View 1 (cartoon, helix red, strand yellow):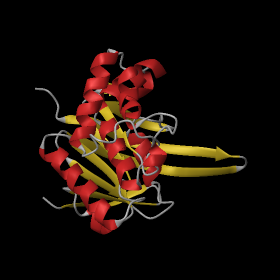
View 2 (cartoon, rainbow, N blue to C red; view 1 turned 90 degrees about the vertical axis):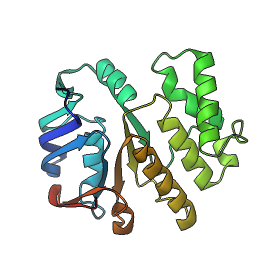
View 3 (cartoon, rainbow, N blue to C red; view 1 turned 60 degrees about the horizontal axis):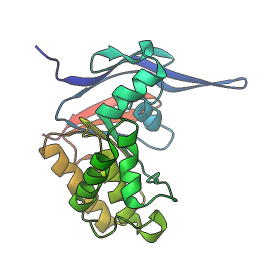
View 4 (cartoon, helix red, strand yellow; view 1 turned 30 degrees about the vertical axis):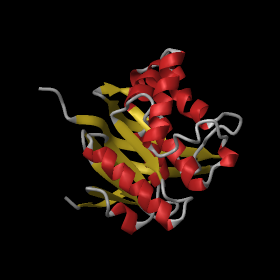
Length: 230
Protein backbone atom coordinates (compact mmCIF):
# COMPACT_ATOMS: atom_id res chain seq x y z
CA UNK A 1 0.00 0.00 0.00
CA UNK A 2 1.34 3.45 -0.97
CA UNK A 3 1.77 5.77 2.03
CA UNK A 4 -0.47 8.82 2.16
CA UNK A 5 2.28 10.72 4.00
CA UNK A 6 4.17 13.11 1.71
CA UNK A 7 6.46 14.79 4.26
CA UNK A 8 7.37 13.43 7.69
CA UNK A 9 9.48 15.05 10.40
CA UNK A 10 10.72 12.69 13.14
CA UNK A 11 12.19 14.27 16.31
CA UNK A 12 13.64 17.14 14.27
CA UNK A 13 15.96 19.67 15.90
CA UNK A 14 17.52 22.75 14.32
CA UNK A 15 20.35 24.27 16.34
CA UNK A 16 22.26 27.40 15.36
CA UNK A 17 25.68 28.30 16.78
CA UNK A 18 25.91 32.09 16.91
CA UNK A 19 29.35 32.80 18.31
CA UNK A 20 29.22 31.65 21.92
CA UNK A 21 25.43 31.43 21.86
CA UNK A 22 23.50 28.28 20.97
CA UNK A 23 19.96 28.78 19.67
CA UNK A 24 17.60 25.80 19.54
CA UNK A 25 15.13 27.11 16.92
CA UNK A 26 13.29 23.77 16.54
CA UNK A 27 13.30 21.31 19.42
CA UNK A 28 12.18 17.76 18.75
CA UNK A 29 9.29 18.32 16.34
CA UNK A 30 7.52 15.29 14.88
CA UNK A 31 4.93 16.00 12.22
CA UNK A 32 3.27 14.27 9.27
CA UNK A 33 1.92 16.07 6.19
CA UNK A 34 -0.62 13.83 4.51
CA UNK A 35 -1.94 13.92 0.97
CA UNK A 36 -4.94 16.20 0.54
CA UNK A 37 -4.56 17.86 3.93
CA UNK A 38 -4.74 21.55 4.79
CA UNK A 39 -2.35 22.19 7.67
CA UNK A 40 -1.71 25.54 9.35
CA UNK A 41 1.44 26.00 11.41
CA UNK A 42 1.05 28.94 13.76
CA UNK A 43 2.86 30.64 16.57
CA UNK A 44 4.09 34.07 17.65
CA UNK A 45 7.19 35.76 16.27
CA UNK A 46 10.30 33.89 17.39
CA UNK A 47 8.40 30.68 18.13
CA UNK A 48 10.29 28.65 15.52
CA UNK A 49 7.45 28.40 13.01
CA UNK A 50 9.52 29.81 10.12
CA UNK A 51 12.35 27.37 10.85
CA UNK A 52 9.73 24.62 11.02
CA UNK A 53 8.47 25.76 7.61
CA UNK A 54 11.99 25.42 6.21
CA UNK A 55 12.11 21.89 7.60
CA UNK A 56 8.68 20.95 6.20
CA UNK A 57 9.69 22.44 2.86
CA UNK A 58 12.96 20.49 2.89
CA UNK A 59 14.81 23.78 2.42
CA UNK A 60 17.20 22.95 5.23
CA UNK A 61 18.76 19.86 6.77
CA UNK A 62 18.00 19.18 10.46
CA UNK A 63 20.73 19.23 13.11
CA UNK A 64 19.17 16.08 14.56
CA UNK A 65 16.29 13.85 13.60
CA UNK A 66 15.01 12.83 10.17
CA UNK A 67 12.94 14.40 7.41
CA UNK A 68 11.41 12.12 4.80
CA UNK A 69 10.10 13.48 1.50
CA UNK A 70 8.05 10.88 -0.37
CA UNK A 71 9.63 8.25 1.87
CA UNK A 72 13.23 9.31 1.19
CA UNK A 73 15.49 10.66 3.93
CA UNK A 74 16.67 14.07 2.65
CA UNK A 75 19.90 13.82 4.67
CA UNK A 76 21.03 11.08 2.30
CA UNK A 77 20.38 13.08 -0.88
CA UNK A 78 22.80 15.28 -2.74
CA UNK A 79 21.77 18.95 -3.01
CA UNK A 80 21.02 18.34 -6.71
CA UNK A 81 18.81 15.32 -5.97
CA UNK A 82 17.00 17.20 -3.21
CA UNK A 83 16.44 20.24 -5.44
CA UNK A 84 14.92 18.05 -8.14
CA UNK A 85 12.51 16.12 -5.90
CA UNK A 86 11.63 19.26 -3.91
CA UNK A 87 11.01 21.21 -7.12
CA UNK A 88 8.60 18.57 -8.38
CA UNK A 89 6.83 17.96 -5.07
CA UNK A 90 6.55 21.35 -3.35
CA UNK A 91 5.43 24.76 -4.61
CA UNK A 92 6.39 27.77 -2.47
CA UNK A 93 4.44 30.98 -1.80
CA UNK A 94 6.38 33.56 0.22
CA UNK A 95 5.15 36.49 2.29
CA UNK A 96 7.51 38.87 0.46
CA UNK A 97 6.41 37.40 -2.92
CA UNK A 98 10.10 36.88 -3.93
CA UNK A 99 9.40 37.84 -7.53
CA UNK A 100 12.36 38.85 -9.68
CA UNK A 101 11.93 42.52 -10.56
CA UNK A 102 13.65 42.33 -13.96
CA UNK A 103 11.33 39.54 -15.13
CA UNK A 104 7.73 39.88 -16.30
CA UNK A 105 4.89 38.05 -14.54
CA UNK A 106 5.04 35.43 -17.30
CA UNK A 107 8.80 34.96 -16.91
CA UNK A 108 8.54 34.71 -13.12
CA UNK A 109 5.96 31.93 -13.43
CA UNK A 110 8.07 30.13 -16.05
CA UNK A 111 11.24 30.17 -13.95
CA UNK A 112 10.70 27.13 -11.63
CA UNK A 113 9.73 25.04 -14.65
CA UNK A 114 13.11 25.80 -16.26
CA UNK A 115 14.88 24.06 -13.38
CA UNK A 116 12.87 20.93 -14.15
CA UNK A 117 14.03 21.03 -17.80
CA UNK A 118 10.54 21.61 -19.18
CA UNK A 119 10.73 22.80 -22.82
CA UNK A 120 10.41 26.56 -23.37
CA UNK A 121 7.20 26.39 -25.41
CA UNK A 122 5.52 24.23 -22.76
CA UNK A 123 6.70 26.55 -19.96
CA UNK A 124 5.33 29.59 -21.74
CA UNK A 125 1.94 28.03 -22.47
CA UNK A 126 1.53 26.70 -18.92
CA UNK A 127 2.56 30.04 -17.40
CA UNK A 128 -0.08 31.84 -19.50
CA UNK A 129 -2.72 29.33 -18.41
CA UNK A 130 -1.81 29.72 -14.73
CA UNK A 131 -1.81 33.52 -14.85
CA UNK A 132 -5.23 33.41 -16.51
CA UNK A 133 -6.37 31.01 -13.80
CA UNK A 134 -5.48 33.52 -11.05
CA UNK A 135 -7.12 36.38 -12.95
CA UNK A 136 -3.98 37.96 -14.41
CA UNK A 137 -4.28 36.93 -18.05
CA UNK A 138 -4.05 40.60 -19.03
CA UNK A 139 -0.92 41.22 -16.92
CA UNK A 140 1.47 38.63 -18.32
CA UNK A 141 3.95 41.22 -19.61
CA UNK A 142 3.88 43.44 -16.53
CA UNK A 143 6.84 43.60 -14.15
CA UNK A 144 6.34 43.25 -10.38
CA UNK A 145 6.64 47.02 -9.80
CA UNK A 146 3.70 47.49 -12.17
CA UNK A 147 1.47 45.21 -10.08
CA UNK A 148 -0.32 45.71 -6.77
CA UNK A 149 0.61 43.62 -3.73
CA UNK A 150 -2.40 41.37 -4.28
CA UNK A 151 -1.52 40.90 -7.93
CA UNK A 152 2.08 40.06 -7.04
CA UNK A 153 0.87 37.44 -4.57
CA UNK A 154 -1.33 35.92 -7.27
CA UNK A 155 1.71 35.76 -9.57
CA UNK A 156 3.49 33.96 -6.72
CA UNK A 157 0.59 31.49 -6.46
CA UNK A 158 0.71 30.87 -10.21
CA UNK A 159 4.47 30.35 -9.98
CA UNK A 160 4.03 27.81 -7.17
CA UNK A 161 1.77 25.73 -9.42
CA UNK A 162 4.14 25.64 -12.39
CA UNK A 163 5.47 22.13 -11.81
CA UNK A 164 2.08 20.80 -10.69
CA UNK A 165 3.38 20.03 -7.17
CA UNK A 166 1.58 17.82 -4.67
CA UNK A 167 2.18 20.32 -1.84
CA UNK A 168 1.77 24.09 -1.70
CA UNK A 169 3.77 25.64 1.15
CA UNK A 170 2.55 29.17 1.92
CA UNK A 171 4.49 31.37 4.35
CA UNK A 172 2.19 34.13 5.70
CA UNK A 173 0.44 34.32 2.28
CA UNK A 174 -1.92 37.10 3.42
CA UNK A 175 0.68 39.02 5.45
CA UNK A 176 1.50 41.74 2.90
CA UNK A 177 -1.94 42.36 1.39
CA UNK A 178 -5.10 44.07 2.58
CA UNK A 179 -7.87 42.05 4.26
CA UNK A 180 -10.10 41.88 1.17
CA UNK A 181 -7.24 40.60 -0.99
CA UNK A 182 -6.21 38.26 1.84
CA UNK A 183 -9.65 36.66 1.77
CA UNK A 184 -9.39 36.14 -2.00
CA UNK A 185 -5.98 34.48 -1.60
CA UNK A 186 -7.18 32.29 1.28
CA UNK A 187 -10.28 31.26 -0.68
CA UNK A 188 -8.02 30.33 -3.60
CA UNK A 189 -5.83 28.15 -1.36
CA UNK A 190 -8.98 26.42 -0.08
CA UNK A 191 -10.10 25.87 -3.67
CA UNK A 192 -6.72 24.29 -4.53
CA UNK A 193 -7.11 22.03 -1.50
CA UNK A 194 -10.58 20.99 -2.64
CA UNK A 195 -9.06 20.11 -6.02
CA UNK A 196 -6.61 17.75 -4.30
CA UNK A 197 -3.55 19.89 -3.51
CA UNK A 198 -2.00 19.52 -0.07
CA UNK A 199 -1.64 22.91 1.61
CA UNK A 200 0.76 23.81 4.43
CA UNK A 201 0.32 27.40 5.58
CA UNK A 202 2.44 29.25 8.12
CA UNK A 203 0.69 32.10 9.96
CA UNK A 204 0.62 34.02 13.23
CA UNK A 205 -3.10 34.84 12.79
CA UNK A 206 -5.53 32.47 14.52
CA UNK A 207 -8.46 33.56 12.32
CA UNK A 208 -6.43 32.64 9.21
CA UNK A 209 -5.17 29.40 10.76
CA UNK A 210 -8.70 28.30 11.63
CA UNK A 211 -9.53 28.20 7.91
CA UNK A 212 -7.30 25.12 7.69
CA UNK A 213 -8.44 21.58 8.48
CA UNK A 214 -5.68 21.08 11.03
CA UNK A 215 -3.71 23.57 13.12
CA UNK A 216 -0.37 22.94 14.82
CA UNK A 217 0.63 25.50 17.47
CA UNK A 218 4.38 26.04 17.96
CA UNK A 219 5.93 27.76 20.97
CA UNK A 220 9.62 27.83 21.90
CA UNK A 221 10.48 25.50 19.02
CA UNK A 222 8.08 22.76 20.09
CA UNK A 223 4.59 21.66 19.11
CA UNK A 224 2.46 22.56 22.14
CA UNK A 225 -0.98 21.85 20.76
CA UNK A 226 -2.80 20.48 17.71
CA UNK A 227 -6.42 21.16 16.80
CA UNK A 228 -8.67 19.93 13.99
CA UNK A 229 -11.34 21.97 12.22
CA UNK A 230 -12.72 19.21 10.01
